[in-house]
Amino acid sequence: MRALLIASLHAAVATSVAAFVPATRVPVSTRVVTSKPKPTLKSSIATWSSLSSSSSLSSSVAASDNTDDTGATSSNDENIFEGFGVGVGRDFSRRWPHLKSDITDGLNAQSLATTLFLFFACLAPAIGFGSILGAATNGAMGAVEMVLSTSLCGVLYAMFAPQPVQLIGPMGPNLAYTVSLFGLAKHLSLPFLPFYAWTGIWTGGFLLLAALTSTSNVVKKLTRFTDEIFSVLISTIFLFGAVKDISSTFTSPTSEAVKALLTLTCAAVTFGSATILKGLNSSVYFTKSIRKNLSNFAPAIGVVLGSLVARAARLKYGAALPVLAFPSKLATTSGRPWLVPLLDLPVWARWASAAPALLAAVLLFLDQNITARLVNNPRYEMKKGRDTDNLLDGTHGDMFVLSLLTALTSVVGLPWMAGATTRSAAHVRSLSILDSKGEITGTLENRVSGAAIHAMIGACALFSFPRMLLSQVPLPVLSGVFLYLGMTSLQGLELWERAKGLFQDTDVAPRKRWSDVPRAVTSVFTLVQMSCVGAMMAVTQSSAGVLSPLIVALLPLLRFGLIKSKVVKRNYMEKLDD
Image (cartoon, rainbow, N blue to C red):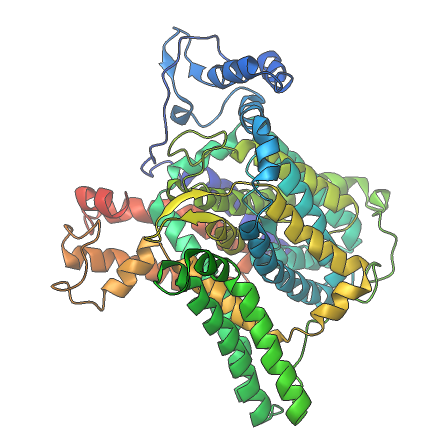
């Protein structure tokens, strides 16, 4: 285990530096401003303290642009690193003036519908991952800790992060890393929780340093090629998990045929009703108001219908389905005190924990920033504190908040959180404002929905009544939610459209942005991306799953190789990977 982590650490350092160098830069917005001195720590602190006035806001934005020693203007997208604290100060100063509208814009029916839908989508992974973690760490951390961390971090992030539309939560690679860290602590005969806490403190420090030096700018070296592989991977994980859970009831020797059919029925009712109702918004049925409300509340209605089917079957035929196994009280899994005894770890191990912390920082850094790129996609038409077409707005401030949350959760023995890709994509899509043709015209950028989702999760840990309500929701219904989540997350991805295009007749199929590229080239490019998804899926499901985000960092090298080997010519690549 120690050898694996050491090898992984070397891979992390090498990949994080080298993977982005050859990649084609994604253009982001540039602004021309008058020459100003290069930002310093003093000017960054001044920026933070001038949030209240519009004139100081304007100056802080202008001061965020870099100039060289000769006074020539160069935009932020030309350099990876910025002055200490400049990026963080810029992100907060540009977003906080919108605080009032961030609240008022979340007080509407669409935000409520989003909250009800994402509540189930965020709660189920927390309980599922927590149960796995409890078994893997001998109860050192379990479902209680995972649910509490999901709630606490989710609320604080939604309240204070410059980009509150993005959600954070438990992720599979982070879970695999924690299990590996437990094995390393056992191998070294070290107490796990103090070792975990010191590793988390170091990790938070590395992330804080990355935030204050604007290291998140490195993700602008990624392109749609990498974004869409990662997006399809996360969607596939949700779809694969849901299908696996449903099919297991048919293949298990202990499962009855009635139970298996009821499982399939509940999942199908939930998924089908949510999908059909969501599509009403672009149909001609009912009035505009009815269509909009049914579409907004489609996932929640699907959960209710699926649960009613399960209840009817239980009352009439006595067929009972499993439900979420929620912790009955708010206490640590092992009964330990909440505060981790940091001094129980030997001094040498406190310093040595910095090594695995570097790998953890790379994992959280990539998860967070790739998710941020997907949420910040210009097609969602977000305006608050943003430049047009800029994928990096808010990322440095978000990383600053995440670093503090990582350190906080570490000292009380709670799991780390990071950008939850599929749930974030579902969140921003659910908040999107659509016209009569189904085209996105804007997004309800707010802090209420994200905070409410995670506050409701926390309420389930604190109060018995929400737990009683959850006991009425069978697990197959949640499988239907995950099917819906996975399928809707694929919509709008060009990789998904090109994958379907492999089986379409080009003579009658609608023209796409890449239709001018020869079909053979498009097919090869698409198959390469699909192969990457398959390979990363295999790695994620294996014992080396902890390394999957590092593979994401290698994807720009693959893209570069496709161009250099002339498998895809540069002009075609620019069209396919615009």
